[in-house]
Image (cartoon, rainbow, N blue to C red; front, side, top):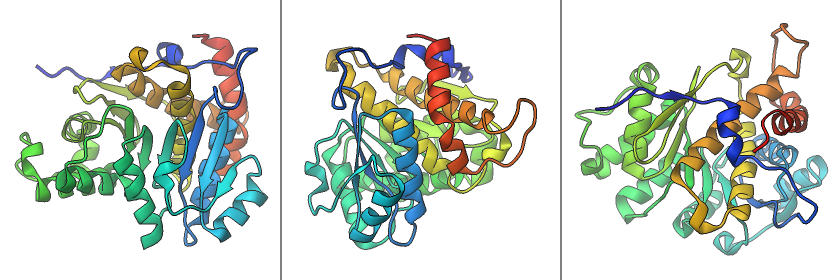
Length: 309
């Protein structure tokens, strides 16, 4: 019997959120590898990097092109930039991938990193690519891979799986439309998580999260003003920073599948709390992602003070 999704709050996620101690340094706080943006969509790179830095990543290693790296140096000087043909050899604790990536060279880098199977936030076009690699190449993913599609991207991923390896989708007789996924997010998040073996964060009016086992959760309450271009890039940066920190600080034997769902929920809730700080209490209004990002440090500080792990 399948139960409905369990609501999650920041208090319930507190166990996966920590503050630095007197012995912490940049490497113990988590090194996040960032492969986002492209020469066509540089904003995604800048927004995801700024969000990751403001969330408290110990280090952000950005893999870009020469022109992207110049923009990054000017906009997010905290990020360590490089150009490499072997991204899978970059030493990181986790990755954030896919937001704004376009062009064959950038997509090839995505493929190399996904095939290395390191923990990561898999966003935007990287979601469909991961589905193809699972279906065609037999790539095995795990709970520490957190995919973050909206309903349209979830439809694309399910289409690839249904076309290339339908045995991974025994519950489906046909691929759902975007509208159908929006109407039954828990069902399709669970199906996608089970087929890929990953944690799913399905974005929408409310956020639905599924473990690979099929346990689902929901996070509600975020402002509808966050439904704007760039919000997903910001969320990917927040979640990437949290994931890298968790991987760096948590011994392998202590990591749990549910913790990755809690990290996903915590990222959504911190994103929402940062948005609440943009305007005076009770006064909703536009939430440009760059403005929301300015309030992430305060949202993280408030979260840690109110809900110590």
